[in-house]
Image 1 (cartoon, rainbow, N blue to C red):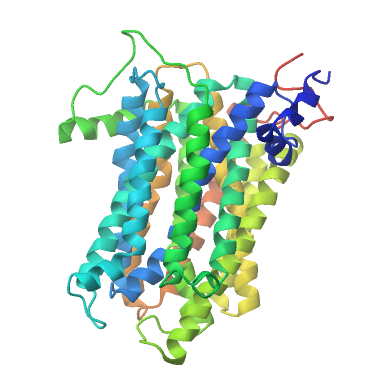
Image 2 (cartoon, rainbow, N blue to C red):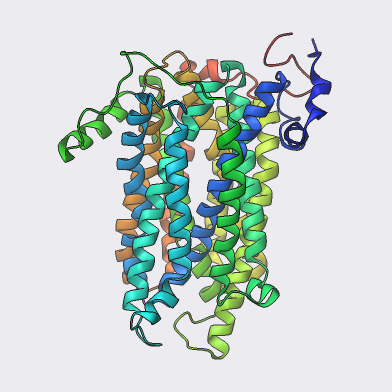
Length: 490
């Protein structure tokens, strides 16, 4: 049953990349290989920015004078933009009649805004000094950084929803699972590259940046331009015409809120248990990413973010680089885990496999709560990669299959399910401030919230995996070359 066009995978540079990161997935006809790779490249360019946010936003804002108890409020940018931006963009793209297609205009606009905010955030301290900030007070710089951070999250959410919807739009249903695994794989690759760069002293190596942050955001900007523009041009999204297309009829605040609710209600009933599991999974994920770099720099390395030079600040900078190294290890685990999960899902069942991934996060949070040594910090952070590989791919495979027959509401359902990743972020952002304040400004206290989320997701998965309704999702999510039939029969 092998596809006769397998040899054509080697016919171009794009298909060469497909062999590296998709050949272990499925045997599609060349066009579908290319679409999978292009979608993954586009998604990866965005993930470079997300992962640099995880590593550098909290330390940068602390350096600019933002208190730790206020950081949770600043981090509300991601979930709030996800709640309001993605449903609106999803509904607007569902009804878009652009000759470029339904999704690509929004991806292009979001990418342009993201590039501008990358520059603003990385040079916020320098701009603040030009506008009157001193060494001890960074009010203007902190304000610019926070504003750029919020707009940047809105821009990234403008890209994320349409990119997910493209999977259902341009690929046959047989390739949806493989595309989601490929997207997960590209996320791991993007994180690995970004955190690997963060572990290097870019300021010292290149000599053209004032801070490590500027070097990292230059990497992100380069990734957005190179890896984002190529797929945007080459993706073959056909324009959709017709009066039946649903568009956003009003931009009034009340109607926007109604659109958010409509996105949530558009989800099929069978997705609700998966929605709750993803809620608690991302509750744990957000409780990890908010404090992790600061925890390594201050608790593991005993650094001081507010020190102006001296050993305390040097230890803090060394801690941030070590945190990037740990996150690079996490990314490598995520990268290899995404490929391994695709193979194992067909034998274990994706719901049970997801439960095993969540168990890894339970153990990881226990390690981070109990101890703060370099070796165990790397081990605990690396184990989060297993958890993230599952949470980033398995639920979206289920979503893609649930909406495969509904062309008119894919954007809405995708945006609605994304709320499962936004609501918990709001809860953690609101709760983390008081938790940190009560613990004496210890960011490690947020890990208790992560442990709570992981345990809740693990318990819910145990119940859902026994439900007969989900047996239809237990097919092999990724068909491997030489081991099973191609996704498009020859």
